[in-house]
Length: 159
Image 1: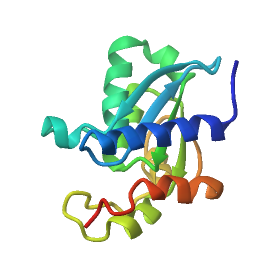
Image 2: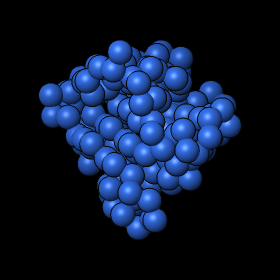
Image 3: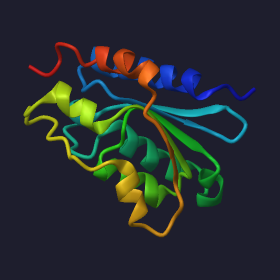
Image 4: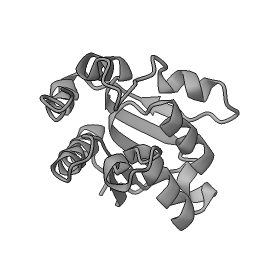
């Protein structure tokens, strides 16, 4: 049974908490099919794998592209705790995931991370990245009612 965006975003935030508890940066993403089934969950794995492309959204897009067809993924939604960066937006684009929903903006993330070299945040909204492509990827977010919940996972992490 399909649930509302808040439900899935809260799940993505829970995944971001797991990511942090596993020693990684606090980001999480999930993939949901057109019927509302959660197909994949992905923590950020950048630190644990020493992989600069180990962001939750990029790793999820890569896993999804190996498991599902582009036609199927076009009807899926990627939910994420924070707005996808330029790299993650590119991965989502190439995987052909048709809808992105995020809780907290990249701008708000920058306020939390500051100039921390571990997360040199772009000032480039995912909508802008997608607008330069040939696909009409739908973007929904931010969700102000979840911003503090998404931000709370980052508190004390970026020293």
